[in-house]
Image (spheres, rainbow, N blue to C red):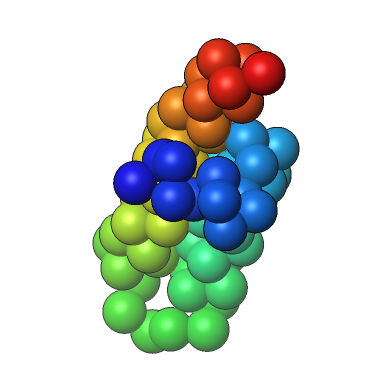
Length: 73
């Protein structure tokens, strides 16, 4: 899968950027949900956690792509 991602032009920098963006989106989704929905803080917390869980995946993919980039040279 990592090899295929590399062939598609996805680099480790893109994956790392997606991880950082996921953290920012987690904070933003928490804030928006807290203000916009009447469901309370519980739902806002769930949205923030859900989006925040994406970051480790993107960072892990970034690490795998970085290894592939260094070994293929």
